[in-house]
Length: 235
Image (tube, rainbow, N blue to C red; front, side, top):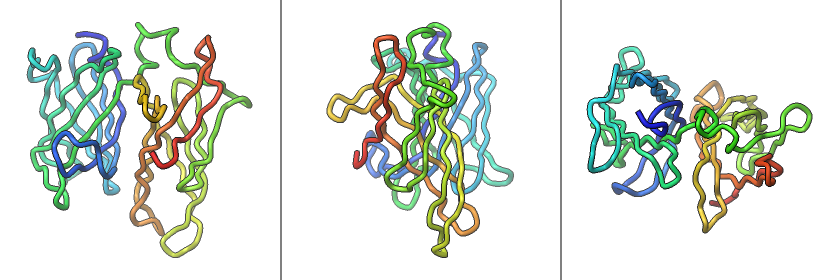
């Protein structure tokens, strides 16, 4: 299997009202791993539940669309999201992208859709050509505009988010979560070249949880050492 089709993929579960439109509302996260043998496993986090899925191999290779396709059923105990079809292909930069569509599409009048990007730091063929984040005391962090939480960036694109937000009763609620930076793309109009999904599951005094895509502009020096991270507010 080609390099873009294996490894780890991380992304967002969202909704959209028209096919092929961008995600209009984020409702959870999706992650999956594809082994070199073709085995697929992963999970979907939404509504405070974790839905797991797996398959021994892909169902087919679509020659026309040049992607690998498999249909799975994410389950959480007695609950299910229905059938989910995963199609993994490569973007223009050769980075793997997994697009997920659902058989049971209706979600409050919209369509559920998942989109996950390959973790470039885990691709051996890209070793030496990925951004290097400073660690320890030199680690970079930003305060997120909407929530006031602090996002700290670590080795291999790992993100740790923590802090306090206003809860349902008006009192501060402590939250913490981790995320994987997604990169391997560039938006010329906005300067966005990375993002991560801030997902905090519903909890006491935070009934809706938090689910928000954080777009970023990352600056590196000539040796790919990250020198600055900026949140693109309003994008």
